[in-house]
Length: 234
Image 1 (spheres, rainbow, N blue to C red):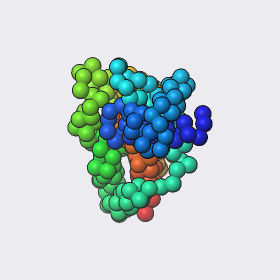
Image 2 (cartoon, one colour; image 1 turned 90 degrees about the vertical axis):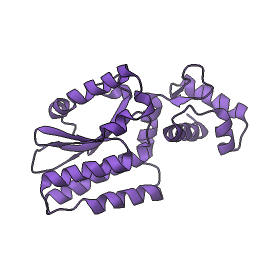
Image 3 (tube, helix red, strand yellow; image 1 turned 180 degrees about the horizontal axis):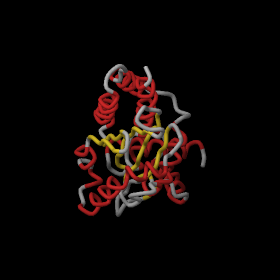
């Protein structure tokens, strides 16, 4: 993939996350200062490579799971934005030690819900705490009953899967069909592992549509895991 194609893919991912509608060549032509024909040619190549696709008869394109994975793998190379710094400071300010650990974890989850507009979750001992279901099911991706059922199936199996699989990366991102459970749910699961008095494998994170602002969310979830671990052992 060329450098320009990487930048076009990044623009498609970020624009689609913001507006929830396919991204057209005319918009990208203005952003990159080239002709629409040039953008269409680059988009055709990105589509051939499997990074974007054309939904239905729309003239615009949306990222595929492969496109999101490429973007997520590159996020760590991008500079932090002022908004990301503000949100992470807000999260840190609300997580303090010295209180009841369970309340601290729940407060952190609720803060993630507020900042990411996704469903927030955390393992507390042998159970799963969730908040923000209305955020998740309020997304335009989940207007069809069949899709809601797939998401519900994922949520039903999430806690036992976490116990069994015990992801050991500080931050794990499962995009769309990469999800070992709920492969057809159209969701991405972003979780951070942290040490706690409850369990050797405690997790905090969010579940949202595959279309989301991965830069912000990954930064916040990673930060939540770090500050929670610090708070648990103050």
